[in-house]
Structure formats: C-alpha cells, structure tokens
Length: 553
Image 1 (cartoon, rainbow, N blue to C red):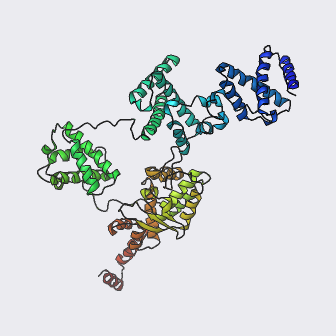
Image 2: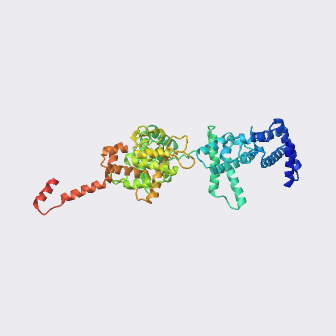
Image 3: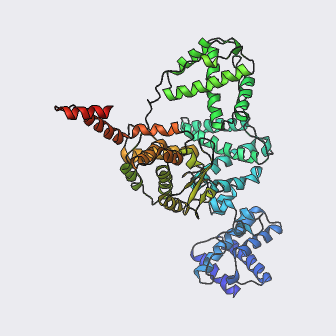
C-alpha cells in the first residue's frame, strides 16, 4: 500500500513539473517509516502526531533547515493524499516548526495569543516575548476582558513587540531594568525612522498611541511586582504657600471635616491658584498676606467664574484661613473679613421640563443596543426617582432588592443611606439592561460602552445632556441630570404633593432646600394672582365694595 501510494505520488510530482521529486520522496519515505514504527495509518493521523514526528526529527540532530524541509514535504504529501480521498482533513494545517518547543505543538497551545490575536502559527510565534513573560499574555487577557476590540489589541501588541525588539538590541535582560528613558529613546527612534522613510514626521496621535500602549503594559507589569514604572514628579514648593502647609490642611479636611476626595482635590486646585497669585504679587510668605491680597485673588477669579463657582472658591478660602488661624500660622482670622458678592436668596430657580417632554425623551431612545438599554435605565431612574448623577453612578447590583422592589442609595450628598421604593418602569428598565450587561468584576450597574470596561462614574452626568440635545436640540436650560431631578420635583408639585413628602422623595436634609421648588409652581401662582385680582376689583355699587374691603381685612 505504501509503495503504491509513493509511486502515485511520484507520478503526481512529475506531472506538475517538480524537478527535485527525489528529495520530496526521500522525506515522505522517512515519514512513512516513522508511521510504520508507530503502527499508525494515514486515516489515524492527527496534528499532534505530525508535531511529534517533527520533534522526533529534531531529536535526531537534524538542523532547523532540514526540519522545515520535512514539514514542507509532509504537508505537500498530505494535500495529495486528501485529494485522492485517503484522508478527510489535513492534519498538518495547524502545525508549525516554530512551536516545536511546546509539548504538543501549536494545537496544544490554546492561550490568549491564539484567541485574541491570530490563528496562524507563524504570526503568533512573533508575539512570544520572553522578556515580558509571564505578564504579557495576562495583560492581553485583561484587554479582552475590558472589551477592547481584536484590531485594537493587535495594534497595541505590535507596538509592544517593537519595543521588545528594541530592548533586546540594547541588551536589556530583565523587565525591571526598563526605565522611562528607554521608552523615550524608542519613541525618538520610531519618529526618526518614519521621517527617513516617508519624508515627513508621523502624526502626533500615532506616537501618542504607541507610547500609551507601551506605558499601559509596563504599568500593569510593574504593578504586579508592587513597583511603579512612572516615577511621580515632586510638586515644586511654592515659598508663598509651602507644600507642607497644603499637606497638613488636606489631611485636616479628610480626617476632621470628612470631605470626599473629589472635594479635597477641588480645594487643592484653588489653593494652588492662590499660591501662583501670591507669587505674581511677590508675596514671599503667607503670614505677610493681607485681606486686600485675598480680595484681589477673588476679584481675579471673577474674570472666568460664574456666581455659583465663585461662592465655592470663597467657601474653600474661608475654611483654609480659619485653619491657618487655628494653627496660629496667621495672627488673626481673616475669614470673617472676606466679602461675598451680593446674591438674593430667591434668584435661583430650578430649571425643568414638562412631564410630556420627559416621556418623549424616554420614548425616543432606541433600546435595540446595549447602550440604548443602559441610557434608558439611567434616564428612567433620574426621571422617576429624582436621583442625582452621583447616586445613580454609585448604584451597585447588590443595592437593588428585587423582592421588595427597592433601591439602597449609599453615596448621597448629605452622607446618609436611604432606601427608596423602585417604580415598575425603573424595575423593567434595569432588568432589561442587566440582561445584556457585560460580565466584569465591578459591582456598579452602569458601565462604559467602550474599552476599557469600567464603571461609568462622573460620565453618567453627560448621558442626560447628550440625550436631551439629541431629542430637543439646544435647550436654554440647565443641562444634565439636574434638569431631570427638577422635572421630577415639578411633577410632584403639579400632583399636589406636600412639601414634606417631596423633601423625603428628594432626600433633602433641610426643608429650605425643598422650598426652592415652590418657585416653579407657576400655575399655582397664576391661580392665586387671578383670585386676588378678582378680589381687588372695585365694582360700581357700594355693597360689593364693602365685601371686597371685608375680604381684604
């Protein structure tokens, strides 16, 4: 059988014009001898056996060139055998000489390189980066878990592979030897090569993407070793406002005042601006700053801040001055001398939309895709329950009690935890989104739609603004989640809800915050004005006039 098959194969080679058919036949004879010794027939042949044969040839001391020849000749013969109907598939299709070092060869390797990058063995072999092992494949797996697309993963992997080649050329032996200088030198080299090849520098975004991909991997790899790749630069010390004072004040805000990190960062931002303002005024020590200097800083801020932001700056500055006075850094309490801009208590009126437009907004969302289901669930919570954007962003899966149809809000503005009933509309919207929500380790319900997959966070505020602009165009109103919260309060007013009930549903700490919404009860005010207009009308006859006067009394 083998002799007859080899004869037919020889005639086939002769017909297609192969001049070195004797070399082909010698390789195939060696392959048949190995199969005979293994007592294996052609129909029993598998990719693992083909890889085992190549490993056998390598163990005999054959050169890499000879093994590649063996692989090539065996593949040609197996194609011929398949065309003759002797085998149903080509077992050497997924076998490559590159994978001989792995037991079982390429079919035995089922790692993330094969799943996330490509199927071809020779292509995958290029991405086996020994300097970056064992973090390399775990990093690619993390990219896939964060829903990066396969083209994006390949593009990032190519940049990291080129950087690996560069490190190999400059004799870097360990991953922990890599420094930001190596990365900067590599980027300069890539830029110079591109300029030489194309005659013009590469696009700025190209270098940014390359640097970002490599930095992302190195941060991941160094982080697994409890190290940092990027060294944090020390903040330059300002003599007018030393870093030591700032550090102690921020710690005071965190421990004693219990401020949240985002508030502490905002205060640090304005204090740094204050330090730069003092530097321009050539104030060398904060102890020598007068109230006129602080007023000058406030006046300087009015150039680019509105009233609301300016009051936030004043609050941060007063708190800082009181802290300096308590610490005896300054001789007197300057906080009480700071004058705020005039603002009437009733000059702020909540902006709202009629409930009919809220229903149009929700009905106009296409819920065919995951993003549409997510946005519909967000806007339903904001509209039907008056949630703040921060409360909706922090909402986790365990916070929803499906049995009692209730929500637990843990990150409220007044630092309390509330349990509110869940409406049927919001329940159905949440269930619809959770059914298609991507699997991830984060407990938060609402996730980003693009990689990296993570909680939506502060970006949730913009979801309402984007959907409002898509539906109604530009609105001369407050944008974002606050508009839906105010609309929810206006709906409660229109349905004759008591202020105490509105206060509970809006989760206000003080009734003064709820009374703001009485300013938008325009229909009620119109009704009162019309009634009083009738009472104030002066008729021609006397008795009616007496009735009006009595009513006024």
